[in-house]
Amino acid sequence: MSPPVKYRGDWVYRFVQVMPDRFFGARKYWIGESQVMVTDPERTLLDGLTMPRYCGDFAEVLQAFETHEAALDLERIVTYALQLDAVTVKRLGWVLERLDITSPELDRLAEYPIKGYRLLDPSRPRQGPLNRRWMIRENLPGWTAG
Image (tube, rainbow, N blue to C red; front, side):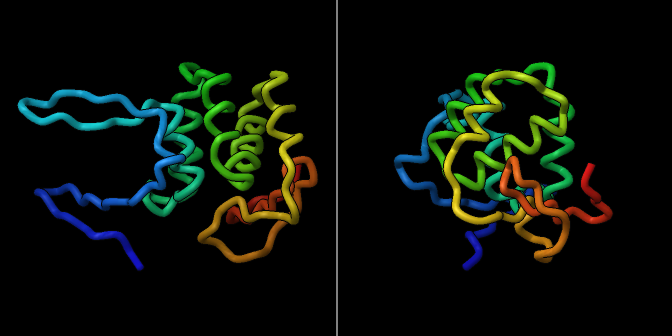
């Protein structure tokens, strides 16, 4: 079932329910007389890896990582990912490695246990090269290993 959709001008809002144990990485801000919760950049990027369909698509998520790479708090995003699920951990590792980020933090992600390969892009078919380090099927259009 798709989340409720709200339209306001040119913006479309989808309300996505989050389990309490997955609600972290957000701060309260005042906008006029309303208080809103906004996730920090690291949590926002992870939400894109978890649910790319709400962020345009997986290509948009990759672009966001490339755009914000220099400002990324690597320790924070890895710590957040390890509080989520195995597929998010492995997608994050794959993305960070693709960005040529080298850090012991990547080893923490690579060591995270997972059974079986997961799709890099959950909206695409189950085809493409298998990445053993990240236990990811690289199912992006036109993607070849290497």
